[in-house]
Length: 195
Ligand code: VGL
Ligand code: ZN
Image 1: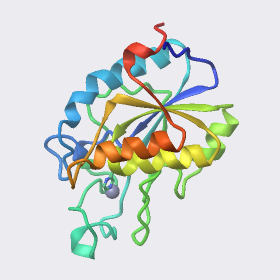
Image 2 (image 1 turned 180 degrees about the vertical axis):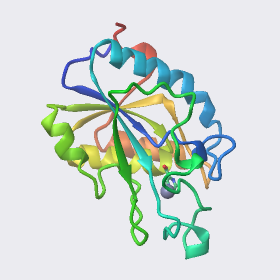
Image 3 (image 1 turned 120 degrees about the horizontal axis):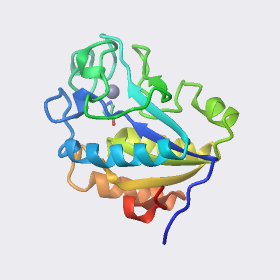
Image 4 (image 1 turned 90 degrees about the vertical axis):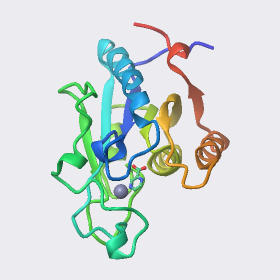
């Protein structure tokens, strides 16, 4: 089924940052494969003058999620470092609204809604439905999608433009199942009405 885009739709790209790409400190397997697709979604939404939002993991150097501080992950996405920058291969428009999350040392925040003004921003813009892609399926995409649904937004999960860490094999597939069980629709690029 073809999904039509409306002025109340926004594209939300989750954490497409160097540290989550192939040479990064927390590389997500096959993450680079989503970049050309994300750029196609960006063109589609830009051409229709629709809202584009990008979240970023934006940690202080002493963040609690890092192994050296007792957490689970290698140090990654430290604010203002090259690893925290959006991929150079991602064509974000100047109009893109950027949301920084997990910015305090003692709090983990996988969701772009956690501790940010994202809900009020989207409401102010009249956004009702979010098309969500990015990294990683089983962490920040999962929690962002669940919070979006809780906060009253419809969600279309862009299943061709997400990749999972898969600490345990199947984590990504399980995350997709959880998102759809909670009300997310899924779509791939060819399911969306062209410009
Ligand atoms: C993420 C692990 C740690 C993510 C962020 O963006 O999915 N995963 N921090
Ligand atoms: Zn993180």
